[in-house]
Image 1: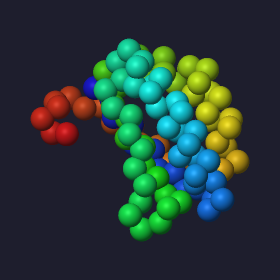
Image 2: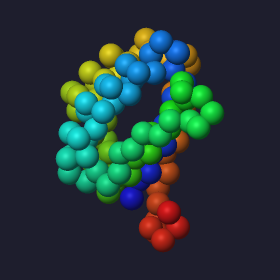
Image 3: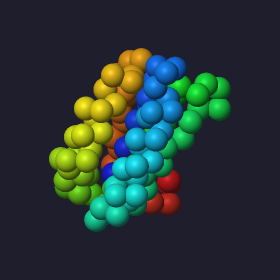
Image 4: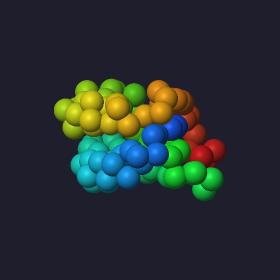
Length: 99
């Protein structure tokens, strides 16, 4: 299993746009074969910081997701909304009991 954690820092004027756009693609991503989790969390300290937690069955399935048109479109659409580049952590989980 692959876990992806993405930390976003958005411009104040863009947080609502980002949330709306994310909520539009989320059902489609969750419907993708091998998607186990796709959740966005907002910081309890500021409304401009978000954390996306994803879990995928395998690296190959994640790679397929990363190549989808909807994700490519989302990246282009959301790029001007960021205060800084997202920070991405990718981990291979060998045993689910440690999650």
